[in-house]
Length: 563
Image (cartoon, rainbow, N blue to C red; front, side, top):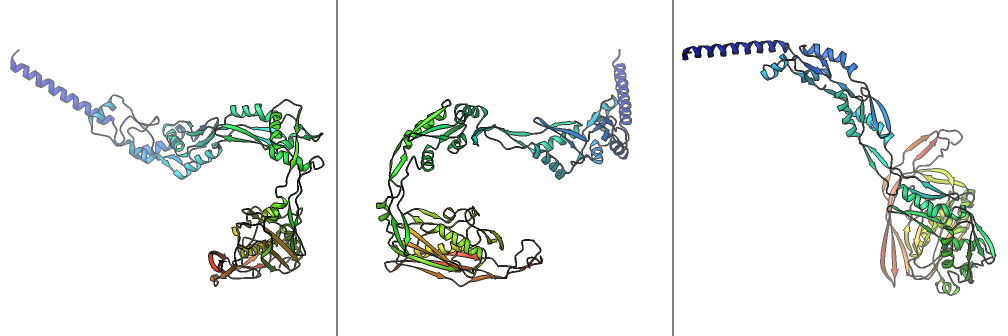
């Protein structure tokens, strides 16, 4: 074959190939469709060759049947059915169609279409993040649980095992993202992201303590042989002295055998004659020492060893308690050396007579009277007076609650607190805790008064002198006086008050409440009180107290019964 003929053949072949390629390209271009390329699917729905509007309409009509509105969310052993649409997840049909794109001139895109290739795209979601997070948070509230440590407790004479439980926290952001992906793929089930926290004290440790100590301890009563007599300690009584506390992954048990021995002696005075502390009373307004007396006690060392052994021994169980001589905690000689020799300070407050005030202030004075505070000790009014209950001798009266006067048990006790505070103020004793009234009460020294509330507010002072302190509380209808006896440590205590400043005016409140009490207005203000300490004729210390009184609002009661 001549070279010329070969060249002619090559040209013809190339031209034919070009024509074929152009034909294929034209065919592929035609197959791709006028708008969205052929073979485009969204979760199996074919929108290839459709116009944008047609594709959007088709997706809106057919996607609901493909994508489940209900998705099951599994979190551990729990499962929840979630309405995805109500939870803020829907398909944005227009954005999905836009994502599908138009017909392309790129041969790499066109030729696969000619040979039946599919272009699968995920739907574009419209997500209301606030609604989705709220829905997942709702599930989290049902899934989440705090870790519960294994423990053992004693209740009504029984040992109770508290089973440990892992903590669970559903991760809201991660679970919300999993829901988005599930909706995009058409999945009907999602596993929530849950973070777990194992308990430190596990079931094995709970079982160990129940089997080795708690169960045997509560198996039955223990008989205590006391001075030849049998005293029975029931399991209900025993559990007052048993305690199990965690230390890392271990539960440790303790028995307060010292307190058990002391209580046994107190509860059986015919078998154990307890010693009596020296104490002070008042005779003709002067302190009088009542000598202490020797007595007996249970030997705590031997008793404790025997009791701890008995608690884990098989029933029936008997413990021998040895009775030995005992001195009082405060002997006569120690009391004589306390220096209760002179009046250090005295303060009196007056009050408008009302039956509840006379009762409550009188009862408080009775309980405060003869309080002995040793050097270094801290005295508490709440501990001394006790809870203000009817059983403890208190009746209902007016108290201040959130800036308003209301009725409650123990109304008037703050008059006693104010009187004690001023007595210890002028004795120069250390103020540990005191709280002023929120409202100004004109019968009290401004900025130098105190209020108390059981379980919330206390009046406490420390005897920071080297000698003892004895309180004398006396009262008559209309007044209460508290006197501090001991040995003077400071020459003089002076109180210096600033001018009242930063006045706040009250407002008027109208109330129809059944417990409404009318109230007259008083302006609020700030005041500073400085306690000045003198020793050897010189100022040795200054202590400043700042008080802010809120306004006493005018209360108008519209309830006829109250107004």
